[in-house]
Amino acid sequence: MSLEEVVSGDDSEGEIDEETKDIEHRKLVEDCEGVTKEGKEIMFMWSSFVRRQRCWRMLMIKLWKQNLINGEVMNDCSTILEEYLRQNSHSPN
Image 1 (spheres, one colour):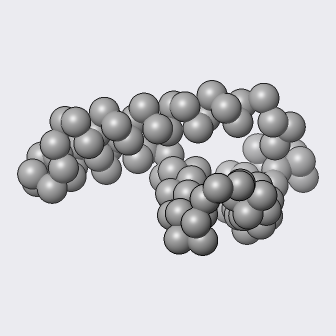
Image 2 (image 1 turned 45 degrees about the vertical axis):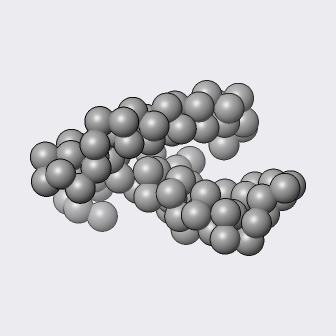
């Protein structure tokens, strides 16, 4: 912990670390029916990436500026992420 975190007085005991979140999410993905093994791996990797990359939209913009993706791909990714977040916003995690 940094000195600022120590003296800030914030209690981080209730926080769940990223590895624990990965384990929990992998269990959820594995329970998905009708999805191939490869599909489940992609779902897990994408959600892990999005969770860890708070500025993923900035990454999308950078990819767009470099002509690596187009506006349609950006929109599709945003729609998928918003739908995923909407579906999982009711979960206790």
